[in-house]
Length: 323
Image (cartoon, rainbow, N blue to C red; front, side):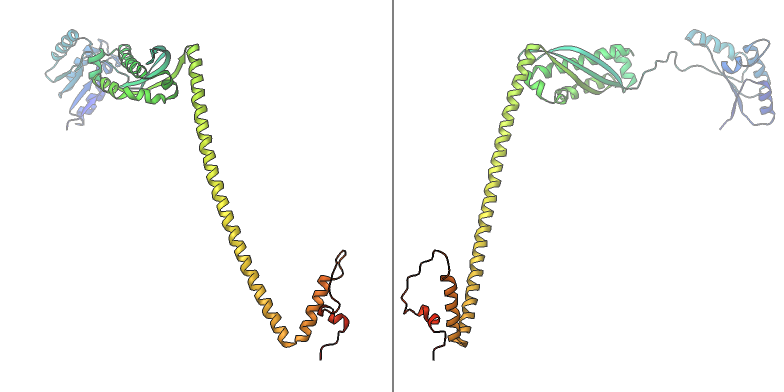
């Protein structure tokens, strides 16, 4: 590795050389003109070559080919240790790598029924390969924008021409641009351009056409609404039928349980009555007669037709137990 001092100051060069810190000097026209020298920058360069016993690398300051080679030859005559540096290229072209946007307003297209549409859209693109871009467009961004715009316009034209007016209005706009994005992107790649995005912003219809389209859309959505309502009514009937079925099952099960419990209760009551009768038949007969009296007598409007000799009045006539 060799170390060069980048300077045009004679004192700095002498000091670095005397201490053995550097292997050479590197200087440029800007460094030379920054130093005050009585005879100018060329004589200062000559003094640097006389002071330095090591290589002196000098960059030529001219900008066109003839001046570059002329100045290089003159500098080379100053010393055998001079290394002349000349520019590798004569001209430098700069390209913007940022995403560029092109807007289009009111572009006219025809649908499948030959109905006119005015569409606003924009295109976003950027340079991906500077060499291909320069060869294809000469480095002119305006020309590149025109080529990209023509390609996209053809894509939109074909996509719109394959659709009816109703399809254009009701469909997703990305579906329209998606049809030609891939092919357009390949064409742009050959030009050193990346197609970033194409977006339809606005679609305008003629007034009479718009009225018919909106009326057609209204009928379409009304049909969709009727269908949805019909489906909802169907689901409602299914839910109600299921609820009625479950209610019937629950009621039937409850009635069955009630009958079973009632039957069990009556069986238990009959067993209790039987036990009471077996313990004291006379008291049981008396108690049952009192229940019959309470349930049969003393109600307003009741009429009871019975023989006086009936056992029904036995305890009313004689409460004493039978012997």
